[in-house]
Amino acid sequence: MVTALWVALGGAVGSVARYALAGSINLRYQPWGTVSVNVLGSLVLGVLIGFWGFHADSPMRVGVAIGLLGGFTTFSSFAIDTIYLWDTGQTGVAVSSLTISVVVGIGAAILGIALGRSLA
Image 1 (cartoon, rainbow, N blue to C red):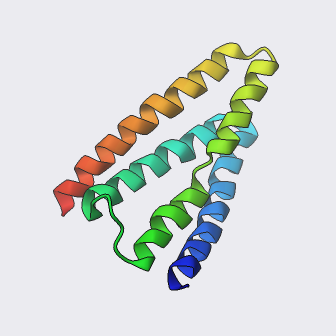
Image 2: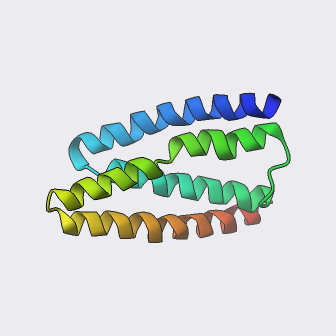
């Protein structure tokens, strides 16, 4: 039960942070707010995994990894943004967003793990 409360609290904070950051960027530069939170979330989770290891061993860590960062990153929004861009003929932006989100997001997670391990 304690773990679920940490996940719920983290999810609320992460969702509000996503709304604020991605929303403010997307107002002028759609879909780069969504891309930004996905890359930043990948980096932060990578740092935490590098520092903690792949197994979160406390309710607070689960709340941060799953709740906060799960609420912050936006794969479903990313999918809809990509489909919208493709559907409206913005195929170059759609492919760029897709490529950057996946490749740079994974790269950010790798970098984050290395940074986290160096801090451990």
